[in-house]
View 1 (tube, rainbow, N blue to C red):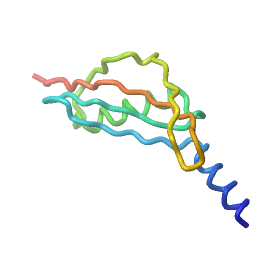
View 2 (view 1 turned 135 degrees about the horizontal axis):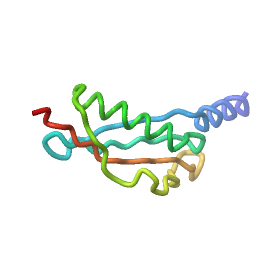
View 3 (view 1 turned 90 degrees about the vertical axis):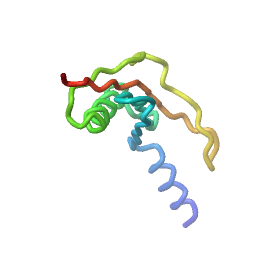
View 4 (view 1 turned 180 degrees about the vertical axis):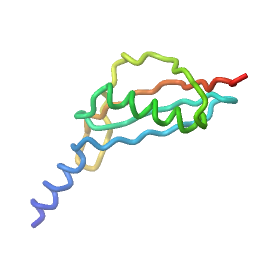
Length: 98
């Protein structure tokens, strides 16, 4: 039973789950970071960042700054050891609209 639960937990951790968060760093400027497992693609993380940017900019136009081609693989400490994780962070600048 323990092996089955452990296998289920490991499978859950290694699936394509992502988390995307935005932190306001200035008026109309947000640092948006998307985290996922090693199975998430750069394009998928970038799509998540674009969706979050559209949301935080309230439908206004925006542009992204940063290196969308940066190295994304990091090691995240977890209960089962060091786990490879993908991370992509870009700055979204909301347009004034005037």
